[in-house]
Length: 443
Image (tube, rainbow, N blue to C red; front, side, top):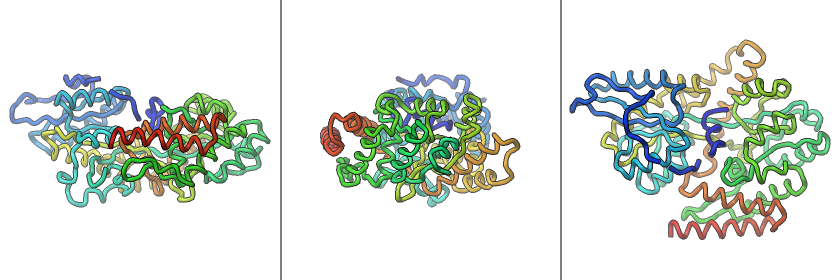
């Protein structure tokens, strides 16, 4: 599965563990040093990435060497940090005033740091028109109020993988394209096949997919003062939608107790008609469940009336402590320019946030299909994922406390699904609980 999605599960998301202190020592197996590194005339720019070593050592070292050759007197010291400990390490570095100059982060943690004044507003160090090189909705996701705190790097977008055999038995040639079509589809799959249509977890610390579906259903999560906006007619319809599906037995019972990994297990076992995932899921499926892979096909992701899909973003941010802010921003623009993003997208099998790179990637994927039926199917899925970016944005705002919001909403929705309270009462309880948290945090 694509890099970002796999990491989110695996916490995953779309994000929240918390943080130990980075050993600012040395470059280890992934850092660089060169002649004159201790020279007073040499400025060292510290750059942190997440879980890219050792697989992408060669790619990053080449880029770093190229940038250093174009910027005499500057040396990039690269440190790769495990995803599971980046928050802890970065917070410790900030408190110790040893923060790096440029960091690869996901939007929720970046927004949290920005809200505490820990990140630099890049508006003053970016050249005019810098935003024009990137997908507008992706660039916008790096803003907080009037401040631009992030430069987007690489992306992933989920698509639907569907079991064509189960679709046919249920009387469908393709899975539903919008959420309002799901109940009839789920009922047909359950009645005619004995299997389930889909799995969307309501485990509070797992995937944010269900929270994203609420936005696709027209639910506004928070207002401008960080208060609950989801206790609305759209919110009531969405809560009723999910609690009704569960109570009717049209969702696997485990959605309230197991995470996204269970969806993968059920799909591989042939017990699920569709799953939302990344294109490279097909490769794992071809290895782990070749029989299911043989009847699997990629389709566009489920959306709401607006047809907006979700995209997961990895950003580059500059801590406010950096003494090389302008240089760090320049290096970030270099890392994310068209040629460099295209090369990384091909190696890492992710999607670029740079518009030029995305156009070139789409053209490459739309060209002659890869040899072999399996590789051709993966290529088709990657193209579909890239095309999804045309109508994709970060659906869940990267606001501070978003993981708490997810936990509150999921916990109350679980109560409604299990019949402990009505769906309207669960929604009201979720809004009240969030507002108490919001008032305590923001006043």
